[in-house]
Length: 89
Image (cartoon, rainbow, N blue to C red; front, side, top):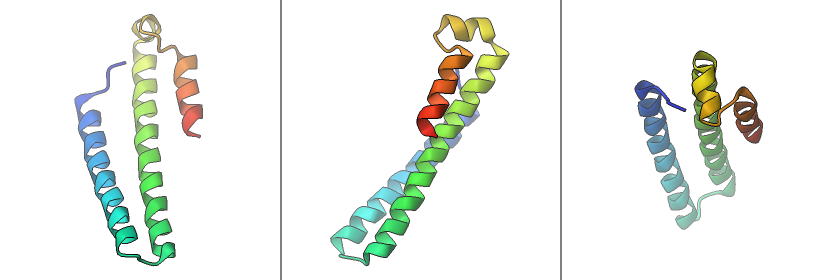
């Protein structure tokens, strides 16, 4: 499956932001911050990571529909992409 360069760039930016969020959570734990605040940040990082996954699946599905023969040959039939989506749901 081939993801467009702009999609990969966007995903990498999102992942770097998430990396920063996770570092912030680590700092919050080290500083013994209130657990409600920590859980709020964990929830935000989790949702952001889920969005990355959904973006990958959406881009992959778009590619599979545009290139059905090539996607099937590479092992990315629509059913496979559906399974990836369901892993995230």
